[in-house]
Amino acid sequence: MMQIAAFLVFLAMGVTNLLAVQAGLTAVLGVPVLLALVVAVPVFYFRFVGSAAGIVGAIVGWQMSPPLAVLLFCWPVLVYGFLRGGAEARTFLARRAA
Image (cartoon, rainbow, N blue to C red; front, side, top):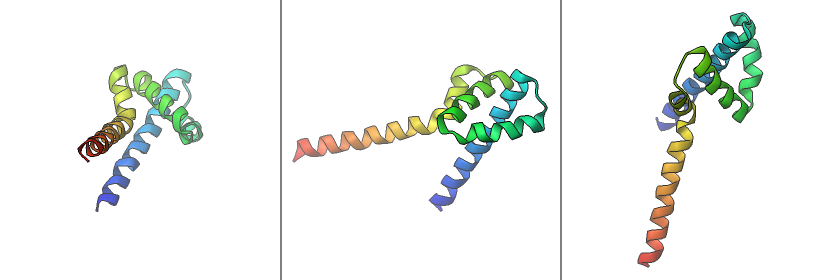
């Protein structure tokens, strides 16, 4: 069940990122929507380039505020950092208790 939920969340994030890149290309370059989608697919494929293009596309194409756009595309990194930090803290505290 958890795997299905994770798959659906990451699928939704991927589609959102792809559409944000498309919106940014349409807004900045003025290309037609279908052509922007075709160009957005290879840009989206590269992990960090796609995320950066998605952030710019959300700001320019969807008129999002920059902090909200960064949060939209970077929340998995923040969650991972929080979980990893908690695990490291538990490991550190377990060593001190032993």
